[in-house]
Image 1 (cartoon, rainbow, N blue to C red):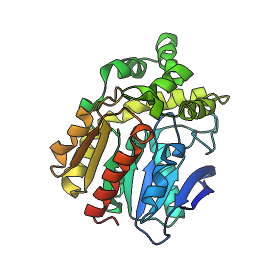
Image 2 (cartoon, helix red, strand yellow):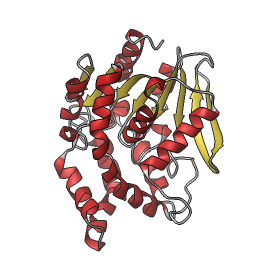
Image 3 (cartoon, helix red, strand yellow):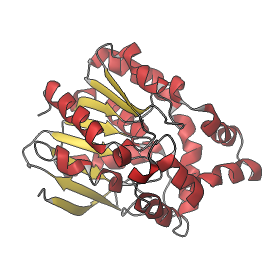
Length: 289
């Protein structure tokens, strides 16, 4: 049985929780989670990857078991979350790593890659968007309205994403057999979303997400110039980031491997075996093994 360590590190005065497993001298894979979850989403994938890799999966500030300072005490932006992640990797002595990005993990990962392109050995995008084609308009319409103007009406609309109903939907939409997804997932996430003050943290990040699409041209140039190996493994039924977002990686990374599975936004809950098999094979072919 794989040993998984559950650890904390203080970075820039903030305590970050992270899961770590695998050989200390193995090639590093950094797993960056999305909204509204935490490194909990990787609990089943970590043992698979840790057979050959040193796996590091942090909780972003404001998520999971990491600190969640109030919005008065910390300026929540994706720049700030990326800086904390970079600081954690430096603290752990990690200078080269493969990136696995999902949802919010993508804009954090793209910032890491743009800051130090030579550090990234491979990119695995699991519903980690980098293209306008990936946005599912029905889902993003209220968020775009919130970006345009923060007022009581637009705030009320995006606050729906903080409810148990929508958290459950994020896990189940696009999944043909919903019995494969444990209710532990959405109850776990909702409990953490419901901590006092966390709603304001999430609203800040909803607003700051507007800074991410303008970075996409830089990400595309990075993909073209670096020739970094890319795997996009997405759910065909993802109604947050559409599969067109996966296909678009081929525009800038012609050798990108693209795998569409018959699932939704959180593939690891319903298609762990298929997704992990694709990921392990990709890492081996990319020399990250």
